[in-house]
Each structure stands twice: as C-alpha cells, then as structure tokens.
Length: 394
Ligand SMILES: [Zn+2]
Image 1: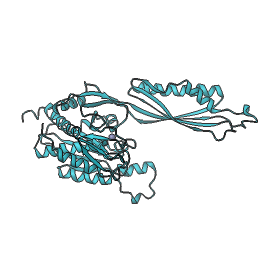
Image 2: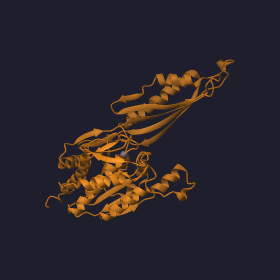
Image 3: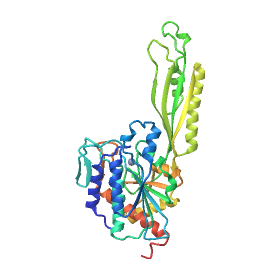
Image 4: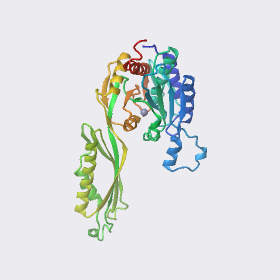
C-alpha cells in the first residue's frame, strides 16, 4: 500500500475546511475542487443542479446575482483498459456555515475552537479522495477508469444527487465517502423515508355558550395518537410525529389541527404498513368524533439493503483489508447520497471517513482516520483492478 503524505493530506483538508460552503453556496468549494482535479489529470464536468434546485424551490427572484453551483463529475481514464469504471462520491456542502472557522490539529485530532462546525462532514471524504488520486498519479499506481462525483446540497435533502443525471455515470459500483464513524465500517443498509402530514377538520363553536355544537379535533388527534406506537417500531423501522399545530383561542372549540411526521424503514413493506396504520388510527378517531381528516404522504428517498454477498460490499471489504483494517458491515438510520445512487441502479455503500460529532461545533476528525480513509480508497481501486485480473500481473 502506497504511503500517504500525511502533511499534504491534512493541509489540503484544512484548506477545504476554511472554504465556507453551506448547502447551495458551494461555488468557491467547487472552483477549488475543479482546479485540484484538473491538476490531477481529471476531466471535470459541472451540471445544472444548482439552477434546477433554485427553479424547483421557486425563488428565481434575484437569481442573476446567485453564482450557481452544479454537481461535479470528474473522470479519469485508467492505466488499465479492461477494468470497469468505479465511482467515488462525496458532498461539497456542509450542514451550516462555518464562516470564521479556526481549526487546529492537536495530538492527531482536528477540531475547531468550538464556535463553528468543522466541516469534516464531508470534507474528510473529499480530502481522502484527492490524496488517493494524487498518490495514484505520483506513484503511477495501476488503476481502471475513475469517476469522482462531488454533489451539492446533500445536507438540505440529497438534492444534488437527486438532480444529477445518473445516465452520465458509467460506473458499476459506487463508494460514497460520507459516513461518520471509522473507515472500517461499511454502511450497507439505510432506511427509506416517507414524510407525512395529517390535517384534521372539526367544527368551531363558542366554548362557553354552545360547546355541544362544536367538534374538537384535538380530542380526535389525541385518540389517534394514543392508539399509535411512535419511536422505534422494530429493528428496521421508526416512526415520529414531530410537529403539531392548531387552535386559535381558548374560548373557541378547536376546529383545525395539523400534524407532521415521518416513517423510516429498511423494509419497504413495513414502511407502507406503518403509514397505513397511521391512516387507520386517524380514520377511526375522526369517525368517533365526527371530524374529517386528510393525510398526505411525501416519499423522501428509497432505502437500500446490501449484504456480504453483494459484490460492492465484497470490494469494500477487500479494500479495507488491503488498508490493514478489519471491515464491518453496518446499517445506518439516516439517508445519504448512497440512497439515491442505489435507487438509480448503481449498487453503492457508504464508507466511514472518521467525522465524529458531525453537525455540531464539537465535530472532530483524526489524522489517522483521514489516512485510513485515503488508504481505503486506494485499496478499493486496487481490488477492482485485481478482480478483473488486470492488476495482478504488475
Ligand atoms: Zn455528510
């Protein structure tokens, strides 16, 4: 395994961390990356995802002043011709701004001064990919065709990956460098998610004069909720109602209430079943009180479930072993671009890049995990080459 240039890896990571890139403001980050990738011999294409996203969200007012950013698709021909192309992906945006970030490296741990997030989610993934690409170039490591995809707006709902034209990708497998936790953990399963809202309509009446003429929807909502299990439903399914709003005054019988929630499951049937249960609970309760309700469902993303029998998992495992790690297959409760790539027919796993406490000001990453993530990338590239027999002779 090629030796990682730790100083260069950390310096580049810190440079990227210093570029503020919250969702939909990735322009500077994309320009930096384009330049780096071109220097490393990649051809870089930028798509129209940024413009499409703004059009979707409807605010084209003042759009002229916005410097759109698209997803970047960077391609590099391999030195080995009969090896299938492999995709690596990471997202360019961070969950919030980290403007004014002060990052330090102490005892091998990188963190901020506690006033901003670090942005190791997902710049640790990008740093690993760039260092791996530089090592491949420098040390003339044999490899097949590479497709590096850098998405925008992942944190705002996987929007960049969603808007990416997957036909542009020729890779048979995808490795997304975007999981918290150590690089030996391969995320092979993640739930699908459907969000929903329930609107309950009752009848208003004066609470003191003629309450018997009213229909209080809070009673109906209460009954429905008391008949539902929320939280963890089973090992692979969760359900939450997180928002409830309604009512106007204490002296009016409450005639309107709205609830918002989500169901997640790695099992599609269970997800559908849980939504049906919610529907039934509100139907039964509304019937009892003479209220009416509407339920709307909004699919957010599909889940995926890969096993050790899947080739993409086997390649990730083999790559991890080459990097000196003992791989472990795990499931994760949240969604990532990996969900989108799997749904598009590119079997993909999400790999740990070592970002801990991500989405908080206590976010850290260790130099060791940055190095291991880099070696994992090299290990995977080498494994793909060997599997087709092309890399073995060298
Ligand atoms: Zn992330």
